[in-house]
Image (cartoon, rainbow, N blue to C red):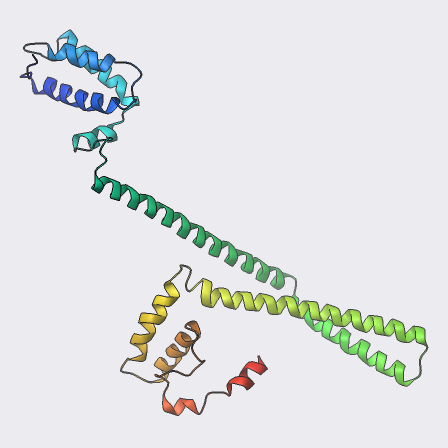
Length: 267
């Protein structure tokens, strides 16, 4: 028969030791020294902190701190049990697992967007450092010069060998200009797409929420001036609506909108 010690220090030690021992039943401890120490301490009629059984229990309990940290002991004191398989605990576990997976996916997505922006920025810096505009102008002048030489040689009945060499020079300069133009155009498209899509809406669903709620509230606003017109134009671009045409576009602005096929062709 066990008795509750009058000393609160001893009673608290035994209570904590029992919590840790109960936790250790799930294969945490390699021996039963804690269980034996608890039994010896509970056999005492009027246990005090100075008795050998209590001192031994404290020593064994301290040795368990490496296996069962204080945070686990605090959770055990609050009523947590590692064997609790109630429906509430299971749902909370599934929710935390799903939330962790969601955070991992979102982190991966944001990392991808960041790396994409870094890559585009590196290309822009490279173009700026290599004086791209001068190279582009030089390529244009080379095309004009070789074309002029080719036209002059053709009108002057130059030899076949000279014409072949001039044609090769013209085609090479034209290919060089085309490559520079393609590289710059591709970079501009990717940079614009990054700024208007990836950087604005990095997480899935953000663009839908923006178009669903924000554009509706803006379109139904009171003011219809130039500020609202410009803001609505940006919203139209994000939400894939006809450029510059929406229910909030002022009537006096409709006649100022460019013809869409012509505007697209000029791009």
